[in-house]
Amino acid sequence: MILDKYFQRPVLYDYLFSIVVGTVLYLCFYKGLFNLPKDERSLSMTSDLANVGLTSAGFILTLLTVLITFKSSSRINKGNYSEDDSLFDLFFASDLYFTTVRILKNCIKSLILISVLGYALKLGLPKEYLEYVFFYNVFGLIIIALTLYRCLLILTKILKMQK
Image (cartoon, rainbow, N blue to C red; front, side, top):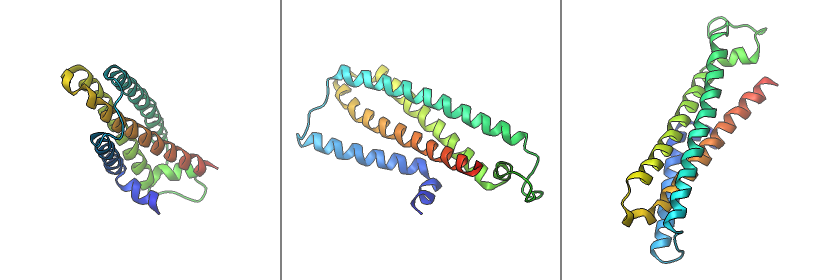
């Protein structure tokens, strides 16, 4: 299944997709197919994306903390489970739990990277390059959207398991 392949290296696929879209947009801009927004508007969007990224990272960190807390109170492990144990306890004893934690942890890293990079560009980019902030914004927006979608997919799978 495509999602299984995606979840093996989701951050890599997110960044590759974002780079491809950014490159296509840059080539379209270079050929004169569209004009870039004003620098002030792009810088404002950079701040907005950085704020969304940090806020989302906080929510995912909360979810990760809840999962780790529930795992610490789980009474079973790989070697001592039975049919009477809840599916949630079985989830905590499985490799799927550790995969989920790894994916969520990487989501947080990715969102923080996008946010810090956005603020760094806003602070340190010379004026003659400000027009190219638009391409970072597209890149950042795609990374944030895909990261949040990945978290939503994980939450959906966990909720389905609880039924």
